[in-house]
Length: 165
Ligand SMILES: [Zn+2]
Image 1 (cartoon, rainbow, N blue to C red):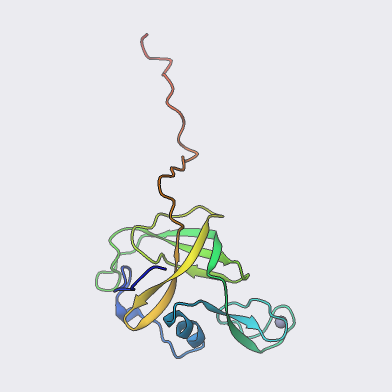
Image 2: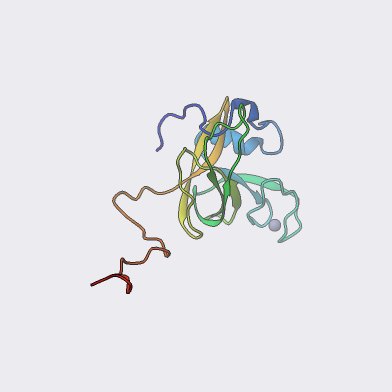
């Protein structure tokens, strides 16, 4: 796992979410290093975080269950944000809409600083950040040591036709 969680790299503790509202089960599980998300109590459909009524069967019972902390990137936004005193990041950072293996969609910032923006469809895992006393989920990229992924914009060096021979 990721080891000890220290102070957050992105936000100050003042921006920690309220852990007593409708998302309390999410934060309680996160504090234990687990990802728990809402499902329909009648048909098990994956629900959005604050969804109360199932799109599939109209039931209004929500059950929170542990889910596999893996998924793929559905979309990526690179955030340029300067709010000294609240935002600690000193450069742009990616925020990713992750499609989890469970069928849930969650929007997450990286677990750690310096995370490059992934490509759509890239696999990600869910880890955790700590804002003051609150643990929140974030995304992490699989480590790929020694592997260079050439960009489509890179092309092999080719001698210029104008070059003198
Ligand atoms: Zn349902």
